Structures are given as structure tokens and as C-alpha cells.
Image (cartoon, rainbow, N blue to C red; front, side, top):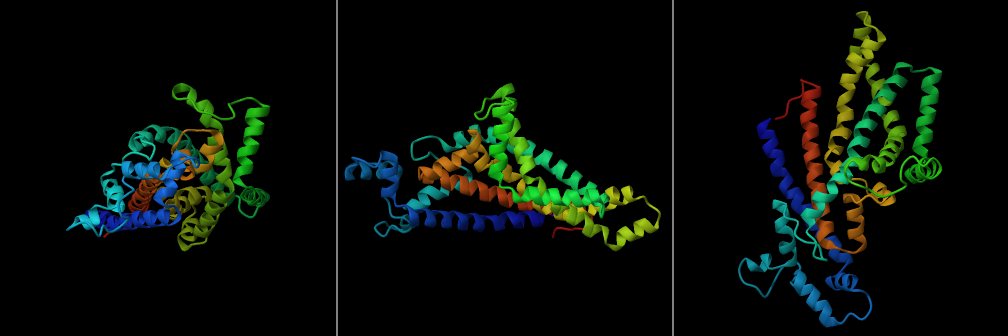
Length: 325
């Protein structure tokens, strides 16, 4: 397994370089350094001298990929791409275009994001799997039929409806929790409770229906018929065999999502005014702050690769027959 993990880590390096390269090329295909300077300085009364000064202070006055006027290795290193990219590979995110330390911002904002994402993930997973097991256990009954109807109805509703409806019902009508905002410490639960409940409810329909399908497919296989032939009860077959074997396809989608929880929910944080990494990324896109955008894209790609490796390792834990070579 060690050789496999080392090989996967080495594979990740060219992937991260490629992601960084495409992010850089696409961003500067849409925006020029002059556009970024005008956005930061204001659209009116910006002199060419002020724009050039802003670019020089942040290193955007250099050639993008190749510095034809430099000598030796500086042809590649004395460029905007190299200057803005090399430090990412040892997780030095530098400063944003308005001078703030990006690493410090990430460190501060990751906790509000995790306060929403982690409970939503764990509570949602427990609810979805439990609901799917109940529907599979009572398959072909009225409970199963109406459960599937409810799942389809829940899938058909936009996520924005859950957010707006939840804010109106729970916060505005019942006054149980604040409608938006965030506070650290012991008071944080009052601000994250509603986003967590909405996050769990928003994913219930699609996830429960998917897991139910996985469990029903497993229940039609030979090992389940063999277990029944041995006289095991339906509950033991379902929870002792079907659940364990059905976990591999579930893990494929679940474990890979764990590192992405760090990034947070873009829409949820914006609606509830929570100062997490999701709202941080949206603000950076709106202000065309390339330093923050490329940092968040790089971090997201790194965490996704980490999630894929964790997924492969989880296969060996769920099924001892799986070997990583």
C-alpha cells in the first residue's frame, strides 16, 4: 500500500500544476491586470500612472509566461505565472490584492465553514442511510411507495426554496434562531443550527433514493439469497450483509467529499452571512482578486485529490478483499 500511496502523491503533482496553469490562463483570458487595477482602485478618475503603480506593487507588470528580456532561467521565473504559482506548492498563499494575508484569512474562516459543513455531513449521512435502509426493509409496501414519492418531491424543489422557506418559518415566524449572522464561541450554535438543518433537508431526497437503490441492488445478489437460505432473519441480512457490501459505492461519493467540507458551502454562507471560506471565495470572484481565487482553487484541488486517496484506502477497510498495489 505504501508504494501505491507514494505513486498517487507523485501523480498529484502534475495534476496540481495543470489545474494551476488552467486557472491562471482562464482568469487572465477574461481579466487583464489593467482590469484588476481599475476594479481595486475604482472605475472613475484612475490615471494610467496609478494603474501602473498598482501593477508594479503586486508584480503584475511582468510578462505572463515568458520573459523574453531576461537571461537564463529568469526567462521562466521572472514572470507573473511563476511568481504567483511557485509558493502555492509549499502552501504559502501570499497576500490578496488588497494586502491581506490569505493564509491567516483561511485559518480564521475555516472554522465557521466547518461548523456548518461537518454537522450537516455527519447528520445527513446518518439520516440518509437510515432512511434508505428503512425503505429497503419495507420494500414494495405503502411505506416504501410514499417514501419514494417524498424523495422525488424533495429532489424537485430548489435548494434556494429550503433556504428562504427555512429563514421565513424558523427565524421570522417562530423566532427560534437569528435569520443571519455569526458569533464565535458558545453562541455559534444559534447561527449554524438552521443552515445545518437546511443542509440535511436539502440533500435528503436525492441521497436517500440513491442509497435505497444501492441497497435494493445488493439484496438481489446471490450472497443475500444464501444468507436467507441459512435461515437468517431479514433484519440480520439487511444490517449484517447488505449494509456492509453496499458501503463501497456509498463510500465512493462520501469519503471524497470529506476534504471538500473545508471549503464550505458557497450559497449557504452567502445567504446566512456566515464569514466562512465559501463567502470568502465569492467575494474574491466579485472583486476579481486573483490571489485569493487561485489559492482557493489550488486548495480545493489538493483536498479533492486527498479525498480520492482516502476513498481508495476506505475500500480496503470496507472490503478486506480489496488490495491497493
